[in-house]
Length: 99
Image (cartoon, rainbow, N blue to C red):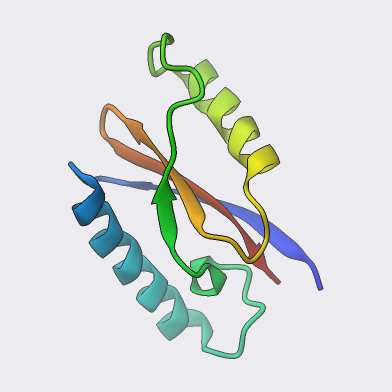
């Protein structure tokens, strides 16, 4: 089967609030798309983990967001936890979801 690379921005101030917001997003996706699997949504992602900013010396700009997107696209794996990177407004979250 295939996979979709999915992203979200979660406004949370710390990892605990991030986890709660992520879990809520997963439950919403399960409600909207069902529990059958292979939806290509966050319903297929088992959890979330915060990872270090790969470009810590750079300001958060559109260019940096694009570079972070590319970095996460290359480092996230299907069937693994979503990865979150802290941003000035919360967290940028990405994962490969089975579809």
